[in-house]
Image 1 (tube, rainbow, N blue to C red):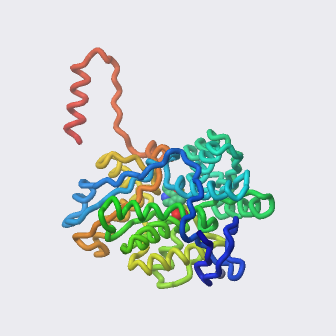
Image 2: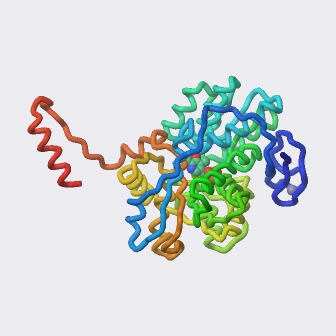
Image 3: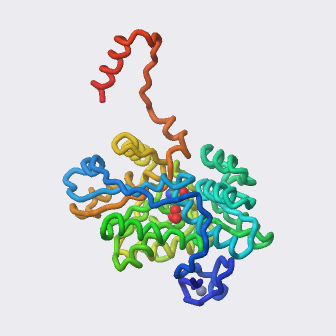
Length: 380
Ligand SMILES: *Cc1c(COP(=O)(O)O)cnc(C)c1O
Ligand SMILES: [Zn+2]
């Protein structure tokens, strides 16, 4: 394995380095030297055909697949980055870690640090969904809540790492060993489908998942079109794509229920620029979805396919109708939607959706209960 700058190609030693010392660019870990990972028994995640979602797109005759990353140990694909980066940090002798997170990377870091028996400091925005905060606290991490958007948490973790000897497991492009843990997603997709998908829809914050899928697919000698999905309320990469720009600019104030991709990239716009470059290189595009479309997609996933996802995890499904209607998917496309995070993490969004419950006053009156069920069946 070696570290190399994605911009100027300068090689760097295998150490805890977070950026190129020549140009400030993103460092990439190339190759795998078999450094032991910290494990919670993670396995290949399921790839499920979504026949009812296919049928929801009029005239579509291709395939829609769901890569169910909710099945990772802590409920999101962030486990893959943390298992890899924590293993590397421990092998380099570091015994304390820090992670800035919108929730899921923090939950993953807290869980894997507990498993490894090392202390973890997790920095999250004060408005992080309760399910994620609870998860982090449950694992005994030192949990720091910072007012304001995610980039402020990012800065604090960076300072702790640079000044106080913590390994920084923040899962933007800052830790090359974390990002390397995502190549397996692309490899798994090619193996599971017996070939590359034509399109992969990826919920995108700063973009390591986009990179990992691209790396895994191209390592397998294949190619795929990457579709970066962002929320309308925080869409710096989509904005640059739509305006034909190469440089991604930071987003002002994020406003979306999709906490997992609510990243304004303030101070590390370079991450977004790199991700956009990969998206364009793949022949793909970037698209933003509204919070209403996210809620509808969560319901469709849960009711039609049996998958309970957080808003961010459902964002690819939210993007499908528009991609199809606007002609960005051929009728015979073989599409993978990355379902990146579990619904348990953000139950509040589901609780705020209309639900149909039925009060049973007399549970011995089964005839009356049966009538309630019949009426409900008639309505569904
Ligand atoms: C972090 C996260 C993303 C965004 O991933 P990036 O690799 O930062 O672009 C997407 N979905 C969920 C659920 C996440 O937690
Ligand atoms: Zn460089």
